[in-house]
Length: 370
Image (cartoon, rainbow, N blue to C red; front, top):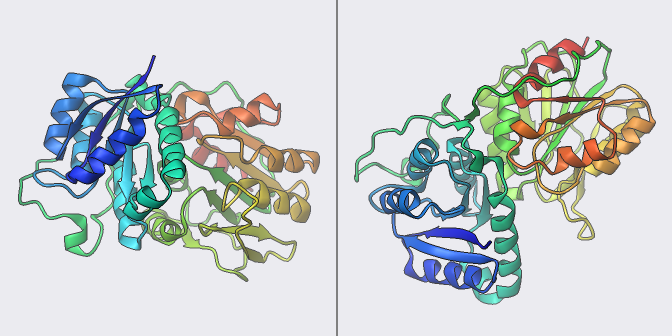
């Protein structure tokens, strides 16, 4: 059956172009359009689409508020369109926190100049998130916040709203069957993730105490314009320190270094971080395999690696190298993933020493690291 899509945007041009691109795919059906967040809620309830594409800045009700209401009333995978700016990153992170599954850059020039590339990216995203766990309705969405037509947008305030404690969470996720981890003097914790990762990392890292004894490296598939804002957000929410990694940074206990978007991050045996240009031959920039592989070479059996929610199989080959060196590999369980792709690749390759739910991972990291 075709994937049913609702297109939401206040720009008539953008609604038409997105609808045309999606309708050209015989496996996708555009079942409706909406010009603002309020219409989006009404259409979501009546049309019951499989996926919603959502703009942020719209009259009457913005996209983030609409996402919150939709997650509360009829949980549906939402693909946000965002600008590739620091402020656009903050808005997008708020949308993911509200319950959106993924995002795409909103670039009118690309739509005009590279229609085939845009069509491929958009259709692939729609198909992927249509299979996400957001469709299962097993996420406890935050209560809708009261709004008025005059509510200011994030961009008009000049800063993102305070982080919310009401991000969508799994409702009563089942405990994993893997035993509690053994304690070990790990020299590095390495975490890789993609779709669903921003919220997943927030859930894991906020459980760690400021005295967490191991250095941490984070690899999240994310554009260059987004990683600095994401690191700043995590740093405000967490007891540990979080920053976007820079070339020459040193690994330190209680510090998490986030790989910068568009580049590659490696670690060496001296505890130094190397930031390298993104290789066009690689699909992912940053790439989990690259960082995991460098950790395997530099730290042997003293790495605890974790692969969280995300599409594809990035991290599998790096995890294989870590396992060959005697290090430990954990995977997030299917039930708590937004997209069970990257962790599934680990499990199917028999590389996982343990499989834990998202809510267990932070607790077990504290238990495992001496």
